[in-house]
Amino acid sequence: MGGTANEAQFQSQQFSEPAGPTLRLLLGAERSEGTLRSAARLATARAQLTLPLSWLWQGLAAGRLRAVDSYCEDGRCSLIVHDAPVVMNRRLTNERNLSLLKRVVLGEPQKIIALEFGVSASTVAGVAAQWAHAVGFSCCASRIPTLVLMAAHAAADPSSSVVADVAHFMHHGARFSAVSTKRPDPAIWNALSPAEREIVDLLVDRKSNAEIASTRRTAERTVANQIGNVMRKLRVRGRQEVLARLIELGASLAPAGNVDAPLA
Image (cartoon, rainbow, N blue to C red; front, top):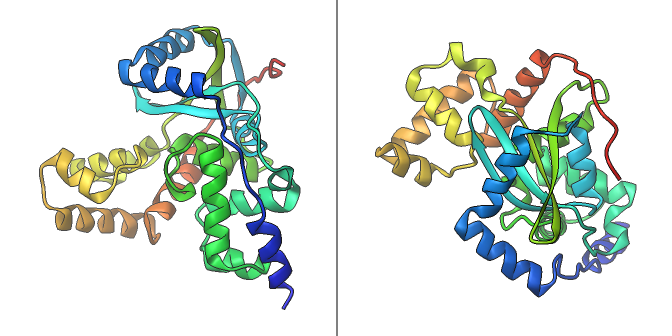
């Protein structure tokens, strides 16, 4: 089968460490102290640019940006990125591989992606996981922050009018960008009970069932039932589809805005 050659091509892709030891130590300390996030908040308050949200996906997918921290607060989803190229195998950034990665992030079944690309599902998952690690995500590609999922959706829709506020700032001699946009969940608030709203809020924060149960001080089975209620109201199956539907609804309500040209 042609899949054997494709397997070899995908499995041969290796990525070097995305950041040197000095930056890794700095970022570890910054995250624990919260000072980088504080600097990002100050920069966001005087955001310099309004860019199409697809800009974020294009930068991460091509390895021009590396994710450092993500958080949701004050009705917005935010991501801090390090503005420095990620060293990775060039094959990963070709059109075919970027298409594969986007479909994984968008939540398409990996078995279907594998079938269409002529590789195994484990290879699809492995390549996506290596990319996720290379650009700064410690989780699997299907659990990356909601803002990145929103950016992937925006990149997949040429007519998308969703924009992000982007603020470039220097911190301890390194250049970062704070990227933020409105959360997608308010689009369905009126259709949900207060408990379901809290559940959706935590799903957008990418919390697991166990983490949601702990936060709400309830049983995981109760959480699962409430997520099931949300799925039925949205007519979807699975967490990823819940987020995808929220993003679609939010994008349909997003007003077209003026955008700036990205800074070099």
